[in-house]
Structures are given as structure tokens and as C-alpha cells.
Length: 152
Image 1 (cartoon, rainbow, N blue to C red):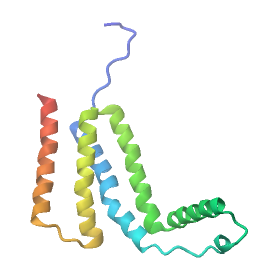
Image 2 (image 1 turned 30 degrees about the vertical axis):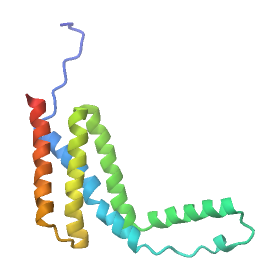
Image 3 (image 1 turned 180 degrees about the vertical axis):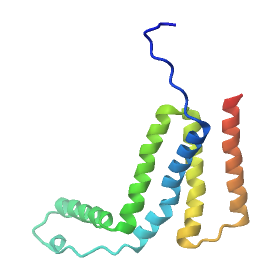
């Protein structure tokens, strides 16, 4: 071993990996029903400039898209969950830079699906059926199998 080489970095603990995967899953999954609800309930403001006959079709469409995006981002019911969701993407990129890709992607995406179901239950008062609970348990079992296969 070369004495000038840096010592190998210690791998983060299992608790840190689990917490990282859970945070991404919550950020992606739990916020989705809130974003959806805010988008459905959104009532855009009127923008009189869009009615101007002097606007060309391309410019009118561009302004229409711009106003729609800005109206949504000004709505905290939409913007706050979106910001948390995007933060989850940043955490995901940090995770894939450190954890094994073949574990990170399926685990975080599976957890996002699970937390989406829980988010719908919380935000929209949807009833979680017995079949959905069974499916969620099977997804958790699949995550366990992925982790176990990497430990062999």
C-alpha cells in the first residue's frame, strides 16, 4: 500500500442508507398527491394582455404558458410540495453518487410508490383497500430481496 495514498473512506452505516432512501421516497411519493390536489383546485387569474388582438399566436401561447407556470409557482399549496419533491431529487443524486445504483433506483422508486398511496390516504382521505395493503407488503418484500441479493 502506498503511504501517500489517502485512507479508504468508511462506508455510511445502514441507518444512514435507510434514512436516505426513506427521505427520497417520502419527498417523491408523499408530496405527489398534494401537488395533484393543488393543480386540480387551482383557479388561474385573468391576464388581460392575452386578449390583446395585437399579440401574435406564438407570442400569445408563450405568454399563456408563462402565466400558467408563474400562477402555479405563486400558489404555496403547489409550490411547497413541489420544492420538497425537487429536494428529493437532489437527495437521490447524492445517493446514487455513493450507494450502489442497482439498489438505489429500485428502492427509492418503490418507496415513492408506497408513500404516494399513504399520501393519497392522508391528503385525499382515500381508503386503502386490502389488495393495496397486500401489494405494498409485496413491494417491501421485493426491496428486502434486492438488499439480500447484494449481501450474498
